[in-house]
Length: 92
Image 1 (cartoon, rainbow, N blue to C red):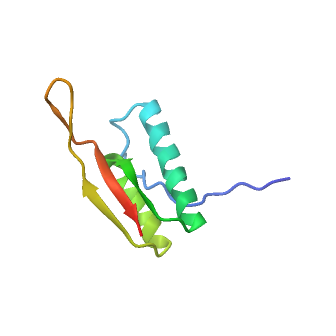
Image 2: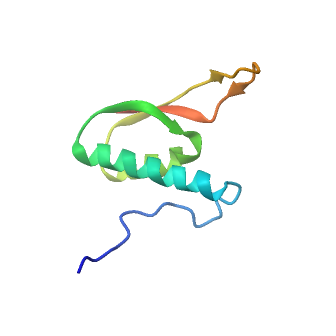
Image 3: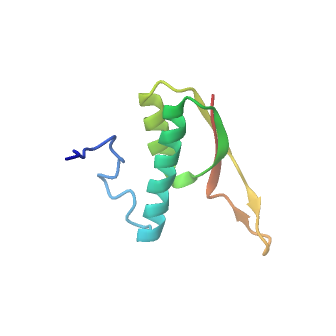
C-alpha cells in the first residue's frame, strides 16, 4: 500500500487564501505542483504564474536551491483596465 505525506507546506496557516474561491485555490495548487515537477526535472522555465503564488513558489524554489526571478507583468484588458494578477517566473 502506498503511503501519502506532505511534500511541502503550502504556507496557508494564517488565512492567506481566505479571500479566494475554492476554484482559485485549486488552480494555485495545480500551478504549484506544475512548478515543482519542472523544478524536480531540472529543466529551466520561463512563464506566467499567479501573483497569489509568488511567496509559496519562492519558498519552494529556495528550499530546493534553485535560482529564480519574478518579473511584473501588466496586461491590458479589453475594457482598457490593467490586469496585474500575473508575474513572470524564470527558473534558471
